[in-house]
Each structure stands twice: as C-alpha cells, then as structure tokens.
Image (cartoon, rainbow, N blue to C red):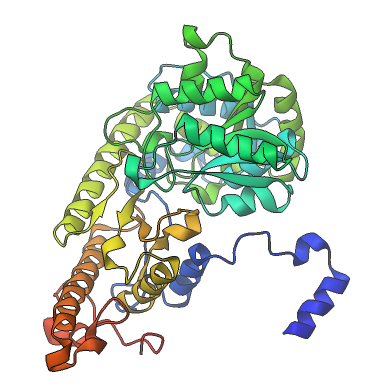
Length: 486
C-alpha cells in the first residue's frame, strides 16, 4: 500500500494525491458503512439505516402527480417530442431563458415574495457543490481564507478548499447560547487571522444552518453584513435550505436585508447567494446549483466557469415548465413545510420519550441531537467510541459533531426526511432499545462490586440483553453482535 502511494505521488499531480478533499472523515465513513450494509425492510432488515443523508423525500408524490398531468414537459414523451431537437442541440452556458426566469421566480416564492431576483443574475452550476466552488474561485486566490461559523457542513472542506487552495477559519459557536453566532466571536476569529498574516477574503454563512437547522434573524444578518462591509469582506450566503423552514421564525434572505433602507450604505458588490433545488425540491440528482451575485464582474466570471458544470438542457426544460406552474409551486411549498413539521415533531417526540433532546430548530431536514450524557467522558475519543457503537450495533448512520468541527463532544446530526414513516419508526425503536439497555448497563455498573457487571456498562458496549430477540420491540429488527464491540 505504501509503495502504491509513493508511486502515485511520483506520477500524479499534487491535487490528485493530497488529502485535502476532506472525505477521510467520519461523516463520509458513515455513508460507506451504509453502502456496505444498506437497510431494507424485507431484503436486509438488520442493515444500517441511512440517517446521515440530508435529503427531502417527503413530497415525491406531488412531483410524480405533476409529471403525469404534464407529459409535455418531458422531451422523451409523445407529447413533448416536438421540442426534442431544439433542446438537444447546443445551448450556450447562459442557460435557457425560461429556466433562469423560473429559478428567479421560485427563489422569490421561497422567500415569501418579499424580495425580487433578476433572471440575468442567475448563473448555473453543477449542484450546490459546483456553485460553492465556483464562487470561491471568483473571489479568492490560493492561501486566502474565509471565516465560517462552526459547526459547519463537513463537505465544505472539499467543496470550498480542495481545488481552490483557500483556507477555512472556524468561528466557534457554543451550546451555551444555542450555537448562535455572535459579533464578538466573528471579530475574534478575524483579528486572530490578521495576527497570523492570513488574508481573509470573506464570511460564509449557511442560512438555514446545516447542521443546526436554525435560521438567522434580521438583527444578526444586519450585524454581519455591517461587519463584512466595514472590513471590505465578501459575504457568501448559502441558502439552499430556504424552503425547508417549517416553524417560526420565518426565513430571512440576505437579499431582503439588502433592500432594507437601513442598509442602503452597504456595498452590494460584496454580497453573493448560493442556491440549489437539492433540498427545497428534493432533487439532488438533477444537479441544479445556482450562483446569484449582486456583483456584475462575479456574474460574468461565474458564467464563464459554468461551462465546466452545466445543467443539461433537458433538465432545464423540464424544471422551467414545473416551476412556472404557480399553482403547483404554492401547493408544493405549503405541503412540504407541513410534512416536514409533522415528521420533525414525530421524530423529536420519539427521542424525548427516552430522554434524548435536540437543539430547538425550525428548519432543515435534520436535528442536532444531544447525546452528551451517553459519553463515557467529555472527550472526542468518547464521542467516536459512541459513534462506532451506533454505526456498528444500533445500525444507524448518524454523523458525529466533531466531523462538523463542533468544539463540544457529544452532539450528532441525525436526518429524518430521507425515509418513509415505517423506517423512521424502526430507527426510533432501535434508539429506544439502545438507550434502554444503556440505562440498564448504568444501573448494573453501580452494583459491580457485588455482582461484577462492569462489562455491561454501555458507555463502551452493549448489554447482552440487547441481542436477545425476545426483548426487542416488534418494530425493531434484531441487532447482530459486532466484532468491533466485542
């Protein structure tokens, strides 16, 4: 293995052989565990349930029904075949005009109609990943840095850093104030970078937050925009979860802040939005990424770069028809919010039944789950031990907080919108069994001098009872012993 690595280092580029892609992380290891043993209610009921993937699969039926009613939207149908030649021919990288108009209109809808978007500023990219990387290429040089509140999306290390060569400087947020970003923390991170002679080019915000599922209020957004403007920094707002808000307070876009009279002094050239249809519409496979910049030069540069990651014209044509159907869009957004709210309540209520709480959130496809009381001690080694048990024995792929650069051990992101109701209930049953046996292990540990039950302490391993099918819930599947835990 070492020989192969040395050989590759000699014949491949530094980019191809470095480890800056960020995929050597527990976040991605959990996905591999799922891929190797995927849960299926009939074919593999003992498999790993994927709760590490932030997908919105709750409203596919609405899209499928629309497709049946609108066969002309597809160039591969009898009704739509007349458009085949025009769509299949070469198109420039500006994108179909009707598609850009539809995206701008949809962005307005997802922001409550309180702000307008110019279709001429809509730039395509290959998903939010491509959009994030392109905007960084436009704004910074290798070695430059961006501030980013932590915990933050683990794949930012790949999307923003790997090929661009920029640095990410975390702004550490704490549970003591529900991980809210503060002006003090931003200022401290910026000044520390300055002292280290690091050139900071901007601040990146994910709003709504991934992994927290929280939204930024107007006061915070104004404060951050003032800070970036005062220091001539770019403000990049990743708003790909804009339409996943299912509870108050409502989502506030940075575009809305720019239109506030109080902020008229701000330089709009420093503000940029990244958007996508992967989360709000549940269409990650369509690879719809959008850059919307208020800077003409950035729009021009990003459009040239978009030739490396265009959205197919067939996809543009289809989505233009769907997103221009106002009745469908209004109904979809309302129903999606309702279903997300119901699923979130069902899942968090199930966790609370066994004493597990989550950070209070109003958006997103996930919860920020607090498992600190299940740790052996307050260390990241203990967090990883608990995570391995959850992956290998409880058979749930949840993502440890350390992979999101969280500075406090014991927090986990768990996704709830990428599965059907039955699978959610099986996941909850597995969690109930785990926590129940964990508590049983704690009680036995208190009597270990008399009964020598130390090995049953479930901070490190499971009680044997966990694998006794006679005590399993009808909803849960048997959980096999793992060699790792033994």
